[in-house]
Length: 320
Ligand SMILES: [Zn+2]
Image 1 (cartoon, helix red, strand yellow):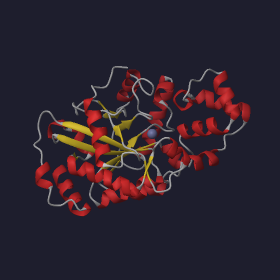
Image 2 (cartoon, rainbow, N blue to C red):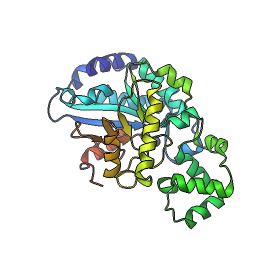
Image 3 (cartoon, rainbow, N blue to C red):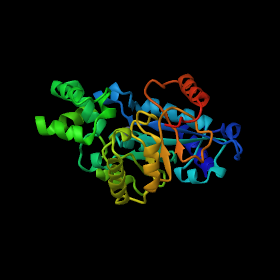
Image 4 (spheres, rainbow, N blue to C red):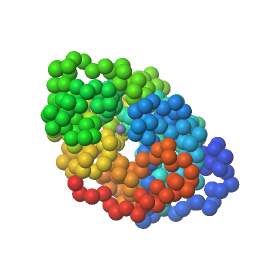
């Protein structure tokens, strides 16, 4: 299936004629590079610029062309059968459900018959509220009272990795409701429920779990993490068959997730968990797979090769 996907994609995006040189046999020794995108937009919001989350449509297409040229893009359904994976496979993923990632990313990928996974925080979509990271970054940059409060209760910086539901609740009790509309403008637009509905039956689009609100898993108690996963999973189930794919918000082992969190998510039924610390997966059958985040500075094939080869040189994910 992967080769068929690639052949069609090539013919559409103008890479025909070079298929033969990159056909690779399958079997043992397969490697899987999982690429992680966020927003695809020519008009990024401030939060996206501060965190390198937005890639222009033109750069995105060039990045995907590089991936098509050098990897065999797989469908997420193929992850469950590692023996069938190509020698140098790639999986395309998006995080957070930005509006532009659907309009400028998924729409084009699907027209090229290229599959991807979108990891969603369903509360942000359904209630039209910013993700937790953006709320905390917004407060940190605009509200002196928040900085004083955070320091007074011992939150370490960056606050979006250490903030807890209790801490944010206490801040709102003391100082009143957070200006969510302003935080949303700072963050950038997310998709709406109608957009999710539009893509739910597209065979190239798979939805995954990214926690309900995008809290940092390592900052949550076990019951909080369970609730964030399960409520999000229930909301995802309403718009399609659950994929069992889960991506930790923020993604770094240790500061963002630990083995405790992996155990919790596994016990709740996930079939694969994704990190984001820039490694190529040399054992694609592992339960925890790593991802390589691709951003606006990865705008030439040389830079993409550099990022990939650096990722490939790293050892396996550490035990945390
Ligand atoms: Zn995220």
